[in-house]
Image (cartoon, rainbow, N blue to C red; front, side):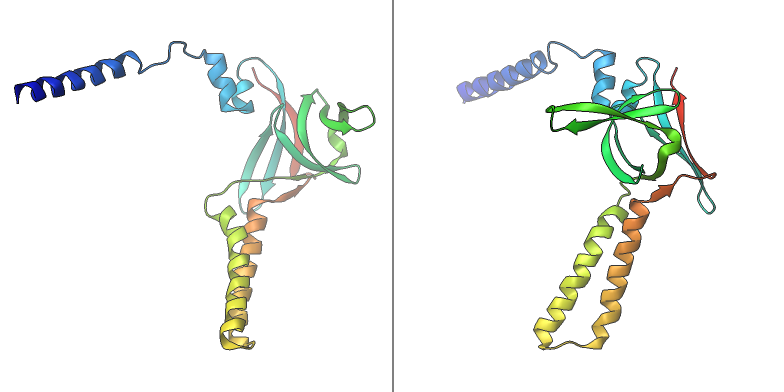
Length: 194
């Protein structure tokens, strides 16, 4: 009995001692490394830099500012084409993205003026709304298919349910992924961090 108690206390002591010795890694990260891990918005805090700001003035929703830092994905329409590339550089009146040049087998910067941008496409993650934009139309399709299979025919009383599910899914998708037309109420400009 004494041997088992001594053995048990020895194991507990060893486990508690080993957890205190190895609880923290030997090298800790600097403030700069921690900010770089957080993302591009935090990296801009390390040194003064320029970034794109999209100021949106909605009638019912009020004013919103969306920020795009170097390294962020920017989805926009300019010169009649859609682009979904990484923001490479921002100057006073232009910004550049990296485009793949297949002939030279490398990425090359393509520069756009701010007044060339026609539309900016945003991808917002809104809890439950973004997921519902995908799930509701699928649920409507499964409900319609299950009704046809179970009843061996098509009944018109399922159409309102399927229509509501598909319509609300489309509405939630548009809320999560708005397409902002650049005009006098929606302006794209360059700002600077200090």
